[in-house]
Length: 396
Image (cartoon, one colour):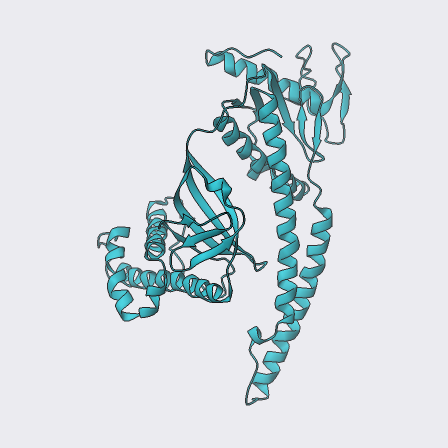
C-alpha cells in the first residue's frame, strides 16, 4: 500500500545553494527538451512521438554540453522527462481542445521543487541522507520505519521553508476494531458534518488568518508597485547602476508574511480534517455521505468561498482512503431530495430556501432539523444501496 509522508527539512547554507541549483537544473532541462520537441513538431507533425526513454538518452550529451547538470540527482532529470512526456500525451489525446501544448517554465515560477527516485537513507532520528545533498537535518523520521521509499520530492514553499514529500510503500495498516455502528453524514457550510444521530461538527474558522493574509496582500501589492516605479525611474534617468526589482527586499518580506498566514490556515484546516475523519472512521463501521459535485456547487458565487473554506472535497478524500486503510465501508449516495423528504414518513414537501433550517412535515407533523433530517435520509439511501450490493447494514 502506498502512503504519502511529509517532513520538514533544515538544510544549511551550502545545501540551500545546492537546492537552488537543482531547482534551476530541472527547469533548464524541461525548457531544453521542450524547445527541441516543439521544433521537431513544427518541422514534421507526422514524426513519431518521443517517449521518456528516448528523452533520457539525450541527457548524457546534454550533461557534457552543460556540466552544471551533473550537480543534480540524475533520477530527478529523468522524472522531468517523464512529466514532459505525460504533458505531450495529454495534449495529443485531448479531444476537447482545452489542453494546450506544454509551456516553458519561467524563472519567476513560485513553486520550486524537484522529484527523484534515488535511495534515501535514514541516519538517526533527525537526519536523512539525500543524493547530492548529503546528510540533511529533518523533523523526526520515526514514521519512516518499516517503509520503502518509492519517490521523493524536495520543495521550497513561498514561506521560505523546505519540505520533503515522500511516497512510501507500507505493509497493511492495523485495522480498527468493529463497533457495529453506522452513520449518515450531511455536509454544510456553518457545520461541516451533521450526523444522522444529531451530532454536529463545525467548519474550521479561518477568518483570523484570512484577515492577516489580506492585510499583508495589500502591503505586498503596494510595496511592489512602488518598487516598480523606482526601477522605471532609474531606467528613464539612465542611472549608471540601476537597481533591479529583486534588489528591493521590502516587498519580498511582505510576500513571505502573506504566504506564512495562508500556510497556517491551510495546515490547521488539514489538521482539523484529519482529526475529525479519523474519529469518524474509528467510531463507525459504515459511513454514508452525499455524492456532491463540488466544482458545480462553487459556480454559485454566493456560496463558493464558504464551500472552499469548508473543504468538502478534502473531507471526502480523507474518509475514502482511511476507510479503505482501516477496514471500514464508505458509501456515496445521490443527494437528490435528501433535504425535501421527511425521514419518518417519506413525504416530499418540495424545495425549501436555505434560510429555513427547521420545518414540520405537513403529512405526519414531525418537526425536523433540516440538516439532521438530510443526514438520516442519506443513511437510508446508503442502507438501500448496500442491500442492493448483497451486503447487510450493521445495526447500532
